Image (cartoon, rainbow, N blue to C red):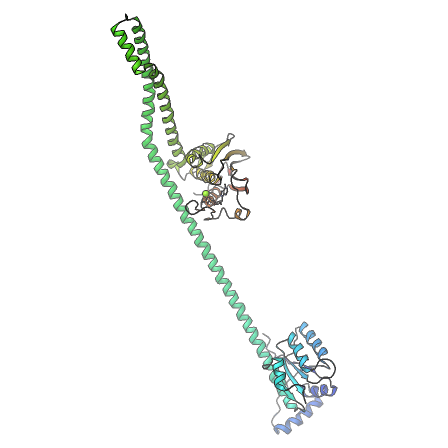
Length: 469
Ligand SMILES: Nc1ncnc2c1ncn2[C@@H]1O[C@H](COP(=O)(O)OP(=O)(O)O)[C@@H](O)[C@H]1O
Ligand SMILES: [Mg+2]
């Protein structure tokens, strides 16, 4: 900090001789200083003389000229510390108006009003200028030492005020700096907390998935056995029934050879009452339907196993994504059955190196979201895929409600949901995003409100250096 005190003084007075007086008092040259020495000796005896303070005095003959100098000085960053202003100046502004104008541009300026008489009472003047703390009154005729003392005290006061202000603004800057640091720290903390919450929810989600997988595997194992023997028994039953049909046919022909009478009539009545012809027709039909049914059960079991891949969760492996999409579709069939038709536009895909159960999870999230985007009218969900260079792509498109532009940037944020509590957790897409990133892939969205939404997933076929899961 510059420790020199600003001793710049502005004098505004319409009387040229006053200018000369002030110059002598405040900027003593060799001759003037002799006068001053005499004066001082007269006042204080022969006490040793203190070195005279050096002031920089500039003079103006009227208010407007004074203001011009003040503005110039401000523009050069060399402000005045103090102004002596004459009260009575017949041309232009009087002293009161001049001071008002000066303070408009430089409220720090210390001011001394010099006058022999005034058009205002001092109280009036102080009230009008509202400057009790930076205004002094110097009555003419004035003593030189009075002027010097005022100049000294008021320029020092100006300097102290300035330094106090500087310290205050440094303090404010420091407070602002600390506040900002604090804000940054609290934002970082919030970020960390969000991340932790996301990690925890991911953990919960993956535990859920793992237990679903285990459950599926357990159920699949339990069901597989009975499904196996039911379906094999049904086949055997079909064969046996075919043989019985042959036997019955033989009986029927033998029956025709019987002589009319008791036994033949009895057989005919029994055949009619049992509706044997209908049974012969219906039993193979029943066996066929049962076989279809058990076939579907075994498909569901297979899909469950395929979806959960519990046998191999969290292992990078080569998988057929199309098969995964179909299994996933079967798993969520109940969710979409009443809301949308599903259209598949598949092309053959190469196997992809991935974590299949996680990719299935992504596809499931996208399909469920698509179904949930349908309104009261039944919609269409289109699943498509393709190959492009060394990536494959999957698309889930719907003609549902679409996503509002202001939501588009947030849908991959954890916990962002537009669905009512209980229906949406806001985690589906953020988890999916994490999974696809882990695969070094991309997930993008295109949506138009009222028309529908398309999510596209692109995955590299080969993971050059698989990330740890
Ligand atoms: N296919 C879609 N159509 C319209 N909006 C969607 C679709 N998919 C996602 N969204 C929007 O993205 C939000 C976040 O989705 P998601 O992360 O799966 O959470 P949730 O489904 O639990 O709300 C949804 O609440 C919804 O507003
Ligand atoms: Mg969802």
